[in-house]
Image (cartoon, rainbow over all chains, first blue to last red; front, side, top):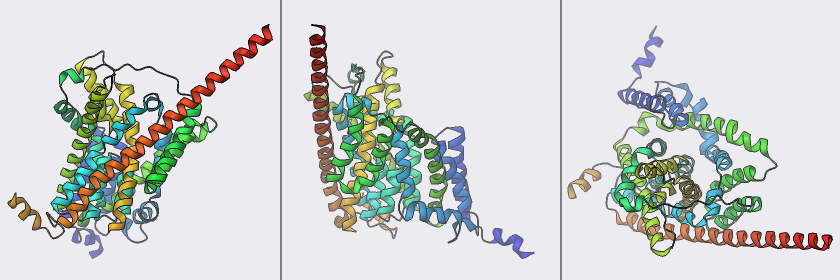
Length: 370
Length: 74
């Protein structure tokens, strides 16, 4: 009868803590509607992999196998998810006002500042860079970079990346208000809904792929998949493929990705003092991303005749489309007639591309050094 | 400050204020930001040129069509 007690005998307090963390993620997903598509599978997975003698994490276990095939071997899952994301994105608002692209670049500041801080705290270079990429506000990019740089903190990085993305509506408004004056927040921007020619929409993903491939070749896997998805959407002849990529395909990958990531949430690797520091650094990255975007918009105002509302700079962080919605909400709060959504969406989609490029750049710069 | 460094140093995986790691990280700040702005600048430039060319071609086509219509009417 001893086999009935085997599970209890092998149970450790760390595993119980991980159950609580898993429960918290499930609670946040269901009750607070925070990134439920990812936090719920991750939460359940955290419980699943932390049961004593859990067969799912053995060499031939399902979660282990999914992780090895879908993430470790080729980073296939996050990359395939990028096809779906690319299909969902309309680059129209960015193409009508290409200078918004600059905000997407500036809002990556938090990544680099966080790398410096993580290095000062004492993380090795590869881990510092992988932690910094939380500031990309983009789950698949964070996973891919952490994998490529062989980070020891993949689990915490993934959980923190997705958790903070869900916390964008709480974190960003505070920083946006601290960095802007009331007068700046009231700046109205004209939006002319110009029709972007279909040819331009088709050429854009190809242009982005070629340019980023020539300058930052390591970003090609991320940018290429994102732009491939967008080309499917814009080409106009693959409607059913585009719809499938946006719905069923993305859903399947998201579902598998969430539960697969939980492989990295085993108590032994997850519960450490470093995890707490990574949580703080993740917050730091999001704050500095927002500051970077807002400040860049202010600097652009010094040189341009048509003033930009600095709030839209905050949408330059990836977190699509949540960051754009946050900007719209903050703008409306100041002046109910001031709609910034379309401008913010332009900055937001540029952030999506910029974060993928920065992810590739970091891998390209750091990989040879480790 | 020293207390914080001391606290961090107590953890075996952390080596606080290690300049061998901090200096490359500082380099990434300017290298990375420069690289991203170069990429973005180039994309904006190519997009603008492409947009300009597409508009010109569309205008020329429209003019040619208008001329053809006029000739046919006359």
